[in-house]
Image (cartoon, one colour):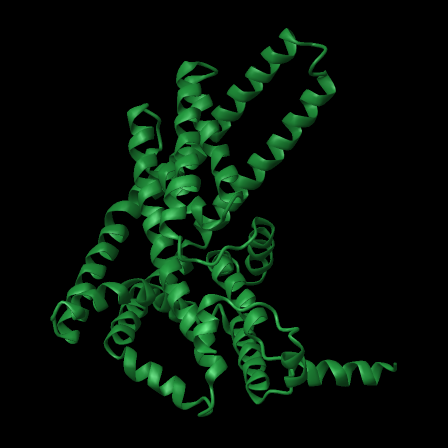
Length: 370
């Protein structure tokens, strides 16, 4: 069998349906637009995520008899209030704590070096002087790079301020019109598609629900985990509580990896201020309980309707999409993995293959459409 015959057979198998070709073109165009224009359209994507987040609340008010426009205005004003609170209260507090932590990093490094010296003196056969020097050299380089990044960030602060102003102006405007004219915008997008779109409608209906639930669930998870971490760290008298709580809250964006990464600053700050003591152990135990409850109780409750995806697939999706799109790739890694899974199951095969029964098993939602 020649290569031409193999390619022809593969094309007939997967692209004999007109909708399959249209779907492939939409996917290629969408991914290309995000890859090449993602940075330029970042305010639009930010507004789209926030609109997804708020649309459920607007719909709830509308179902209770509140006029659509009034529902949009109420939710939009609440969103603006939260945004101003973050911009003028929480962000300055986090920034001040971050600056204080960076300034105190050399003292923390010196304390850690003294602790390693003491450990090496107690257990000379366990830790050799060469290992000590290697660890100290690695830590010194990391601290030097951290200082350089902080200096670069401060020098570029004017550009960051201008970008922040653009976000604060454009994003609320986009959110308001996305909520107000949702039906018009969706209708316009549908008018660009062909009349026959059974496959597209099936995938869109499934992914629209899942992505909206995922965004709202992830937002709630960040708020709950961050708030619980803040009060827990404050109870133990740990400094930089707001900064550490934000890091712990945002760590839930990256499954499995985020919890491990957030452990390092929590352990470093606790070890520096409490030393190797009971308080240090209590902080780590409390932090471990928070992560365990999040992974085994909170996340299953919030994402019970999300398709089950294997942990290996989740980690690969985080690495792949995060490498392509940065923060947004990490944030949407699970929905994108879910989209790919839905495409694999829903992609039309040739009529001969359908009759032979070689199509992958359908999900319950797909059976409803069939």
